[in-house]
Image (cartoon, rainbow, N blue to C red; front, side, top):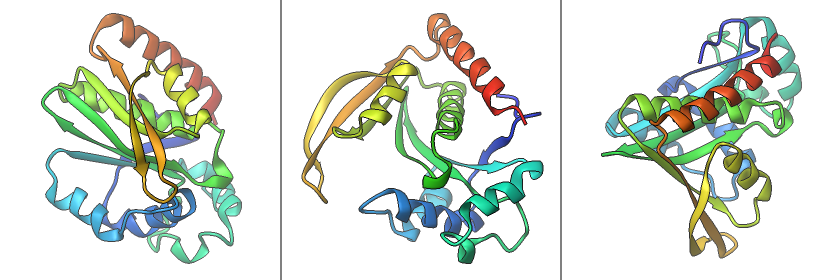
Length: 199
């Protein structure tokens, strides 16, 4: 996706991003990953691909204002715009598996999650994946609806997968992400999202 003219951009996660990522992680998940897990994924897992979303420079001050208080102590010291969301996946053979995706609670429902999802699907396709899978909490109907919009279908269920509440995980998959029908659908969704995220 071309981020030129958009309010946000997606870029590869760096080790220097982990502190900000962890702040959003803790606000988003009952059992957050430890910092070391992200360091391992970035440095030692050749099959891992992680991304962060930042506002373009023009919108950075507005996003800092939206996040004030909650993330003030995690702000980047290099004056880059703040991280507002992140996501990552693993790729093995022809399967990509989304391991995490989150957006800061104060900036949800603005298309940022979709932007991350599209970036991951596009990257997975370019490195040879033909399908992509994920787990989502059975109670998280909003996320399931978003994934369905992007061609994911329920393919299974994992009982008690989320140990914090003994909650089931719904397993979803999007097939043939490298074929024309899916690519046309993804392009249409991307075009709509671009209009929504124009500065």
